[in-house]
Length: 220
Image (cartoon, rainbow, N blue to C red; front, top):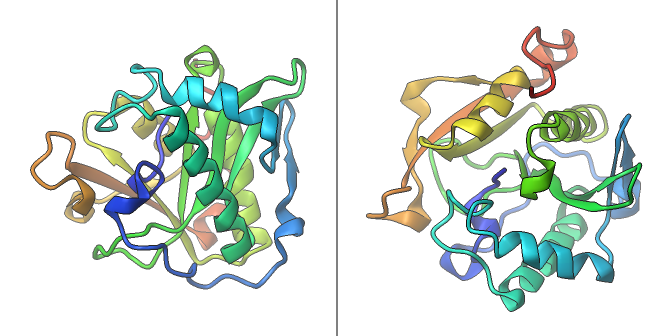
């Protein structure tokens, strides 16, 4: 699964701005989120090796311009942790309860580029291939959205990916997010690249609080 390109190579983009409409909570308040099968938690030193292996997997990184080196993957963890300090939320490491295995990340981040829909808060995910098809992305993202709307009082959360990324778009739709084609955009970090065109999905607080969408179901 995927998340914004400011979590690909930060030197291509500006430093992320502060998150809009966020009630200030200390980073410790979002240290742990628990679901039926998963723990969304802060990052540990032992996560770096399996995370780097995931970021070096060409299938996992299919909709990114390149895989990450170990140094780039470690730097990404540092930027993720900095996001918790800046905003009180971030991209949580996702751990399977039963096995204790790191599956990847899911959470909330602030896009570090300017677009018609920014400033904004994005929900995103990236999971190892072995975790695909089990409903983990939907389960973890649902928990992240719950935290964003309940604890941080966000008005809206967005998600975006390349047009070709059908798998992640399906998760967005399962979460009850909707796309308006007029919102689609060319990612500024990918000018001229075949992956530049992106689709944008949104969900507002009122719609989320109205109750689970019929489509918010696990992957098959």
